[in-house]
Length: 212
Image (cartoon, one colour):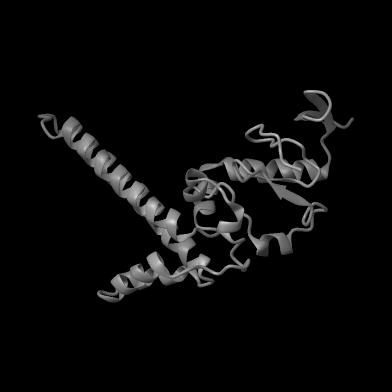
């Protein structure tokens, strides 16, 4: 007997049943992937980001890292216990890894916005050249049309937080490789940038009523 799951529907009744078939199982797996920790990290390195949000993202990351270091130093610097001092050091290392991971993702997505490979981020290891590259990422305009890394972020018109954490990423390459029937039938929420089915009236993520 085919099982059933709850799905949200805004057009008729608040809740309806839908059969758990092969297509729904695939969608559930994809959704679980997106919500997982490693799925979140992987998603950070996909898609594109424009110049404004790139600059603000770097500023946000730097200030957050600096504040975190100050808090960790205040909590553990006067500790006479070797175990607490070690704990503070471990937390500091984890914070630095998180900061570096996020910062690199911004660089990669900015390269993508210009239609370039994200592997160019390793050029930052070259002295002097890294400063030139950083200036180009700050000031050089991205491609106005869609490219293989995703859609033009300026056309998506998504907010700052959704942009830096890449919540509205849509890869044109992924759409080409997707065999599902909804590949070309989608629209975006004008508030949070989520990808939705073409006939959706409300955003399933933030609940906003979509514009016709």
